[in-house]
Length: 111
Image (cartoon, rainbow, N blue to C red; front, side, top):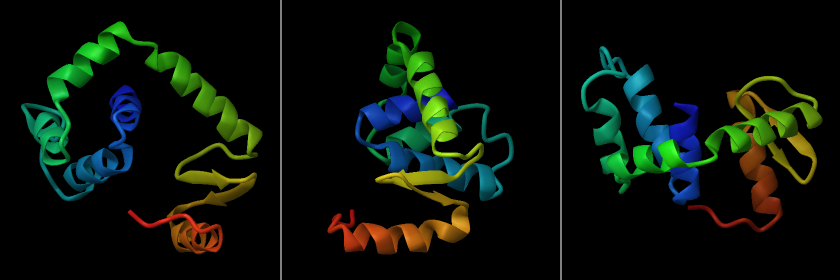
């Protein structure tokens, strides 16, 4: 799953893919990890699942995951969700609105 997330982000669809997969996992889809559920989640946000798998098999996704892990530790955190903007950590889903407030202050456009 983590490698799929990395690949989705490399294709500029990381957040959309995470949302689609989260809806499967936390929305009550039984056996979300079996069959073509993940493939359909990818398709729903404009990603080619088979191309993603091919890229993962040939790629360096583990290196990026390790760099992200090191960045998380450097920010003083150990879990998810953790977002860091200009050195300021926002830990936990209850901080997402505060993160959005900070991004608004910095002039970051909403998607």
